Image 1: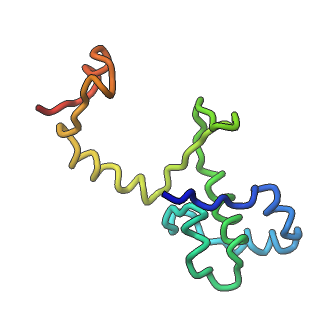
Image 2: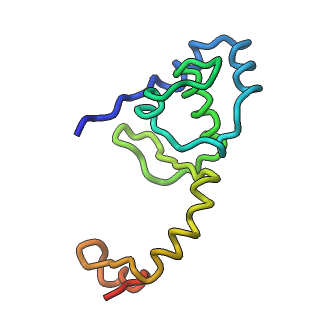
Length: 124
């Protein structure tokens, strides 16, 4: 399996764009809730919205995600804090997942300890 392409660092993307262009981009950006959640490796292969480059589109995506990100106590391999985003699209689909998976998520001893198993719904 091929490793996904890594985007330019956020600070480098900000440095590439002048202050006037950044203000222009931010003032005309679509809300994040209207976008599918894409990784850079996917986004860079898609046609860009009118008037943007791929790097500008990615910068706007990252700015939007920073507004809704939730931190965790986990760190990545380089020691940076890990966070995640719950977009409106995902939040809308969680009840569907909950209904469809209710009572059918099997948990065995290889995944969790016997003591933890009692905290989850299991099916035979």
